[in-house]
Length: 95
Image 1 (cartoon, rainbow, N blue to C red):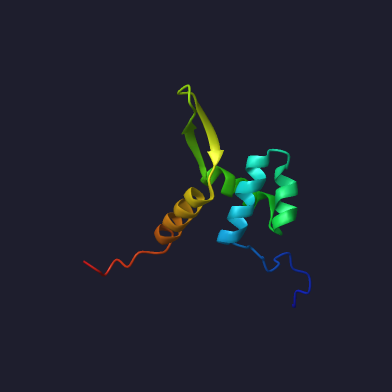
Image 2: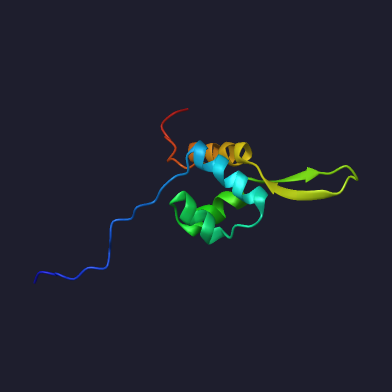
């Protein structure tokens, strides 16, 4: 029996480039964009934007020693690269 209907589709996940991270940082600093608008502007999924904002969020002090959280593209890229290097299967034969 052959199956003609299937539910699996090829997924088209996209990673953010450094240029896209810079644009995302500008949009996050502006504060007038929603995550959906940021995703539409960058041409990626809203969940990608959400994960990237969470990944690159850092605590910054102001002049009165109060802390606020801000997205920084360089920090997001650093965490992304660390996660990519740790995500591959490890070779257990190396000692």
